[in-house]
Length: 191
Image 1 (tube, rainbow, N blue to C red):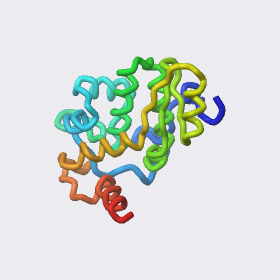
Image 2 (cartoon, rainbow, N blue to C red; image 1 turned 135 degrees about the vertical axis):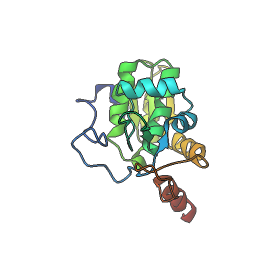
Image 3 (tube, rainbow, N blue to C red; image 1 turned 30 degrees about the horizontal axis):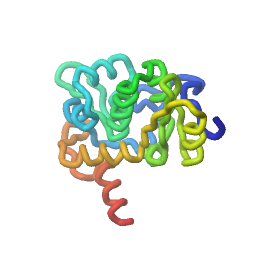
Image 4 (cartoon, rainbow, N blue to C red; image 1 turned 30 degrees about the vertical axis):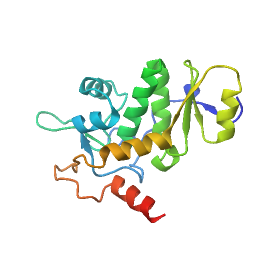
């Protein structure tokens, strides 16, 4: 399958940019405003039990703030909620958890702006990243049944889901509209 990249064969583990757990500095698309667990669940369409399990097992960890003991809450950024929604869709279609972990690691290597132009395709066994229509056509013409997740559409769904939900900063103060989501809306309105 020329052009598309099988994210099931990506070498190495999760990128070092795990916002707080790795050695790398946060990328420019990391938000300083996050959403508590119940809000993240609502925006991603998952249960709190799933969210908690995925955080404890390292599948999708909160990028803004991890739970640091009694009384603190995890805060999930826009990218985290996008990834949560993608994980849910991949699980719903029967992709193995091992393949999902590899795909999540691959997604963490990309800026949010890069993700918006990406389509994830899967034949149920492997997950492929397609960044052009030609790559999607290549996979579909292979004769095997595949499904796709257009990440640009998922980004817009997450944006819409978070539009009226409460956010907060890592220090516990409410988000004031200067978060990444507000900046993305303003940029889109200006174009």
